[in-house]
Length: 275
Ligand SMILES: Cc1cc2nc3c(=O)[nH]c(=O)nc-3n(C[C@H](O)[C@H](O)[C@H](O)COP(=O)(O)OP(=O)(O)OC[C@H]3O[C@@H](n4cnc5c(N)ncnc54)[C@H](O)[C@@H]3O)c2cc1C
Ligand code: FES
Image (tube, rainbow, N blue to C red; front, top):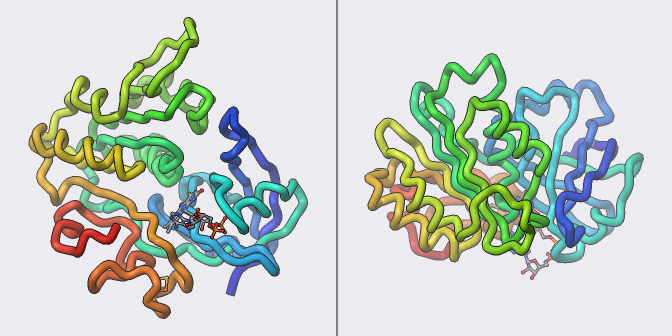
């Protein structure tokens, strides 16, 4: 059953206003206690009379008392959500799915590579790893994150703060810009990955983005020496039930909602290429 949640605040992320972040507070204290998630998981957001959609949890488990979701406006439910304001109520069901392999990544370096709005659960991951209780559990953290232009970058204030904090190596990039004050990289994510050439030694790579970015980035990681077992991806298949009951989201024998959405490239390479 979905938990009732109140929209606490809405933040417009991108200049085209198509991506907004929603800070939600579960109404019932008991539900707040029950909703214990890990970075990489998703939840189903529901709006009465419209439907229910899977959205990655953008807040870190270390951010207590609220949940953050960053939503791209594409169709019926997301457009209705974009029209809602602080104080409005929606439903939240979850947490669902698996998470990034935090136990296996402990003591290792982590490279996060992201393009476009697939940065949501990676924001959760970065905030989680940078938390003072967790930072020493991981080695070097490197982020390569790209968007079409500066106005399409998510979490802009946080990107700058992470860069200044010095606990993480940030490589922000845009496909193109005519902003003379732009101080970061210009170039596609795969190109910047090749240029920065993060070391594969004792390192996990988490890669999320549009198919075209994945197509060109994965061979570069292989060239850099990342084994398929240490390349982690998160899939965004169409879903219905979210709990392995309806068969809507399967790839071969795997249900993305339950066995995923997080898979290693080694796991995916054994499945039919339906993703
Ligand atoms: C595990 C998971 C995590 C996700 N995390 C996020 C997130 O953090 N932020 C976010 O904005 N979106 C995320 N999505 C995608 C999101 O679920 C869809 O965009 C949403 O369901 C669209 O609902 P709608 O009713 O607005 O669109 P609809 O009216 O159902 O469809 C509108 C258009 O979107 C396309 N579409 C619908 N669902 C999907 C989908 N799953 N993948 C690709 N295209 C789709 C349809 O083909 C159609 O063209 C995630 C999906 C999954 C499975
Ligand atoms: S969405 Fe129903 S089985 Fe995955």
